[in-house]
Length: 316
Image (cartoon, rainbow, N blue to C red):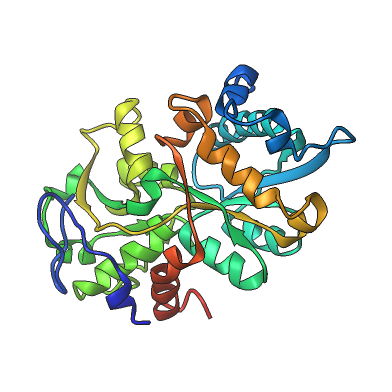
């Protein structure tokens, strides 16, 4: 499949993307967990077992500040443990590559991956199954940001970024590297050709900090993190501003290992999907994930990510 055909339409502002164009643009309370499952008996999510509890180890790519991630996944682990009658443990990882490796070796059972790392992990782990994504992940976007010292204001043209010191997020981040690199190349901007070569901050929060401080003049990150930091006052608008917004693409999702299914039973994928999609509006887990709901997903949703990844040499 050609990556140029695979990318969905969308864009910055109110304009449409063409071939050259681009648009600027703790415990989760047990009662809530039980309420989410009220339409079913407790056994439906716990598997009906009254014997010893099984265990499930969850992980995630480290795409944000560690304190934010610790709160998020500790809350999720407690909520899942109560709803599924499992001992759910969150295992932090050091980088994106470690998440893929630990999933492949069976050390992590269920991982919150970005689009690219999810494809990498699935290709390396036969039988791995995408379970759910957030409602916002079927139309995800990235934003290019610039230090105000550049004098740049929001525009459709990505060309001016080519002459700036530029940083991505992680090297295998979908929203912080893969798709932005694709859209840069669509406008004939070499995604590796920035002065001194591009930087890799390691996370979306770090990208904001580096551009805000002037260590880099421009960068790119996922729009959800950017909006969240703007809303909570973390972003200094006198130092850094949004320059452009990408078209839409599928991104984050939960990926389940085949070893977990063998250990905990063939109904595990269904139990997990029922848990995620059954979280009620306003639940703390949804709030922390910045989502209105989780929805089902499937491997074909990430075909475009795989195609672009292969074209850019990030998937062999």
